[in-house]
Amino acid sequence: MSLQIPKELESEIDELIGRYPLKRSAALMVMHALQDHFGYLSSESLAWIAFKLQIQPIQLLELATFYPMFHDKPLGNFHFKICRTLSCAINGSHKLHRFLCEQLGLDPENPNPQTTKDGLFTVEFVECLAACNKAPAIMINDKLVEMATESELRVLIEKLKKDKND
Image (cartoon, rainbow, N blue to C red; front, side):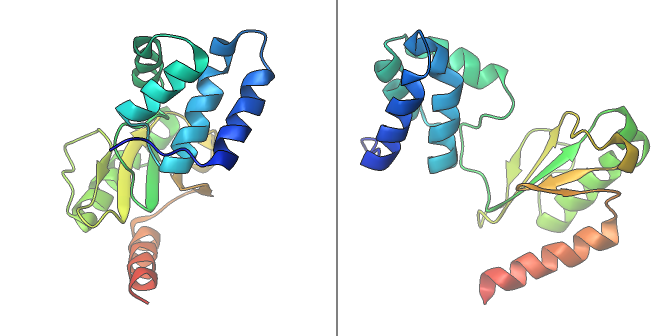
């Protein structure tokens, strides 16, 4: 399967690249643009970016594996990012991770990103979400949930499942 980049997206990427004195300086921004469009960065995406920026694919793979915000597999429609740093850990984020995994049929012992078989949910631990004063914090897609509780998450999961089926 060859990667199909929509013309509009390629134009946006060309404009992004033009903002930098060296093409390679746009690598992170271009990676974000493709991940935002496709939901993850495939090896084909990285090869396309490497060609576009005139760099070696390994340079992009280094970035993609170093930065935790990049994913090499599709994420679920609802991406639960659970803060695991000190304030949130003390206030129960590890317990919430276990709860979410158990509710969704995922392995609670696995700290890596996991996606449900139906592709609806992804759960992963992340570093600080900058809501230490309202721990534990969880980001669901782009929405921050402060002082998250199991009961709140249970209701939310049921609502999201129901909305999917409607």
